[in-house]
Amino acid sequence: MATLQAIRYSRGQLLVLDQLRLPHEHRYDEVKTSEEAFDAIRSMRVRGAPAIAIVAALAHAVELHNGACDHTSTPEETIQHIDSRLDYLKESRPTAVDLSNAITLLKLAVRAAEIEGLAHPEAKAAILAAYIQAAETILEKDLHNNTSIGAHGAAWLQQQYAATPERPLSVLTHCNTGSLATSGHGTALGIIRTLQANNLLKHAYCTETRPYNQGSRLTSFELVYEGIPATLITDSMAGALFNLHRERQNIGAVIVGADRVVRNGDTANKIGTYALAVLARHHGVKFVVAAPTTSIDLATETGAGIKIEERKPEELTQISGAVVRPDGTVDLSRTERVAIADQRISVWNPAFDVTPHDLIDAVVTEKGTVVKGANGKFDFSEVMPERWAETVGKQ
Image 1 (tube, rainbow, N blue to C red):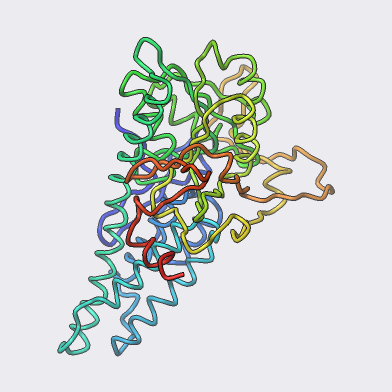
Image 2: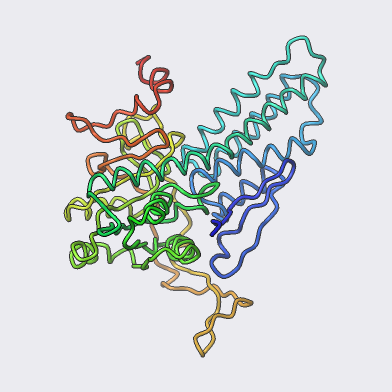
C-alpha cells in the first residue's frame, strides 16, 4: 500500500497536509509564501524535522518561481532578498537542525550560481534557478535517505537480536517519525516499516506523545493505514510495558527520531524521549535514534548548547477532536475544543528534551549505523567525513 504524503509539490505549487486535522480529515493547504510556510510550521500543521526543512525550502522556491523577486535590480539584491526570507523562516522552529542546515545549503547554492559575464536579467534567472534546483534536491534526497535509514536500522537490530521470521522483534516508538514527518517512509518509523517488510516485526507499540498527541493522532494512523500490527499506549505506560511484556513480546528496542543530534551524540527530540531512554536502559532494551546526517549538528559539542523551544500553555490544558456521538460513532463534520485542566494553572511546556548520549545505543543514519567506541563516545566522522573535517578538524 502506498504511504501517506505530507507534502505534494510540483514546480510553482506546494500543498501541505494539515496534520492538526488528522486522523479524521485529510485536507491539503496550498502554501504560496514564506509567511504561510512559517505559520504552517509554527502551528504544527506540518511537523517533523525533515518535513519542516522541506516545506520552508520549497515555499520560498514557489515564491521565487511566481515572481516574488521581481523588484531586485542586481544579483547582490537578489541574494540579499533570498537570505532575508530564509533567515525569517529559520525562526519558525529553532530546535530542528534540519532547517538551519537546509538554509545554509540554499545560501551556498545561490552564491555558487554561474553568473559571471551575464547581464542582470540573466544573472537573476541563474540565481533563482540555482535556488529552486537546490530546494527540489532537498525533497528528492530525503526519500532516498529515509529508505537507507530503514535498511541500516533493521539490519542492525536483526544482528543484535538474531531476529528471524520465526522469532521477530517488537519495538516501541515515540512521537511521529513516518511519512507525515518526512517526504516519505520515515526515519524511526521507516525502520519499523522495513522490519515489517522483512517479516522481522512482531509488534509495534506507539506512545500517545503528550501534549500534542502526535503518536495517537499520527503514528497510530500511519500504522493502521499500512496494516502494521500495533498498539497505542500512554506515555506513562512504557515502564509497565517493558516490565510485564518485554520477554513475551520480545521487545528489543525503543526507536525514536531526532530534531537535533549534536557532536557527542546528545539528542534533542520530542518531550518524553529522555524518560523512555532511562526506562529502556533499566530494562535492557536498546535505545536507537534514527536521523539523517542533516539532523546532526557538529558545531554544537553537547546537548547543553541546544535551544529548547517552549510552547503555549493551551497545548497542555486544552484539546481538540472530532465529536463522538452517543452511539460511539465519530461525527467527522464536528470538531470541538475542550478544557482538560483548570485554565488558571501555571504551565511549563517544553517541546523537546535532550537525551544524554550515554543512554543511546546507536544512531542510525542514511550512511550507516554509528555506535559508541571503546571510549563511550560517538564518532560521526565516517558517516559525514567532509563536514567533520570542516567543523571538527579545524578546531
